[in-house]
Length: 379
Image (cartoon, rainbow, N blue to C red; front, side, top):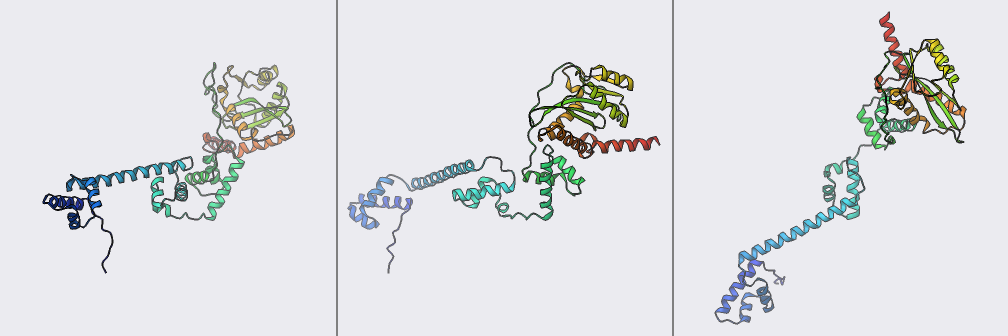
């Protein structure tokens, strides 16, 4: 049994049959005889003649190539438009990590029904990376992540660098890269600080009268905060500029010059009087009581120029840490609560907070190291 499957002619075959048919027609044969000879219908002959009449085989071949090229270009444009739509549909943000790229490939496959190969090409990830299965987190990683989350809650103003140092102090055998990776994967961030206004004023550089040993210069300044009921409290902060230790944080509804002298007397009994005290030109510091205390103890007074807080840069830096790490995150219900919580923070600041200026030692550790080193040298 013969097959009646319809046979399609290529453009070259059509051109050749048209040429043969025209020769037969020129020889005097009728069109129906020519069509029977060529094994085509008369309607097909007229259609071929309208489409390919006057063309040569090379022209038909070129036309076929142009049609194929046109179809390919249309497909490329359609694919490019689809790629653009898929990229627009992805979530906002850069796809920097392999895990985010894997999730993006999955999203494109589900929403657009494209193949994994196509989605990987759009996202920019190799298919072998897509098929790579993430290793399950071990127990140590899980415990370290939990430790970082607790650390971030307890120290909201500390970043991953300080977290890495504290982790090693706590006994974790980890490097900075691992801590940073886990810190980012857990989404832990330090809140952005507002850009400070550039200070202007008359004064000298911050480095003037820099201390060379502990108990040479004490810096003092006032801070203010409010209780839950809206009442204002006043904080007197005193630090040792060399060791960065916070010597005292006196809190009261108001603090006058006599109270400043009382705090200085208490500190002088335990630590000895400093060589200098540095403060601004506030009324509590320029009062006769403070001036008399300096004269009786042989302590010099260093007053900064008006409008030049950078001349008292160490205490200003301490004020910023106290504000960020405690005052902005704690709401005091009473004056007694403020005194207790602030004293606990002061102890933690002196004993547990590392300083980059001290080689990541806390102020108390640095003071002990300095004392031990210089006592051994003197001996």
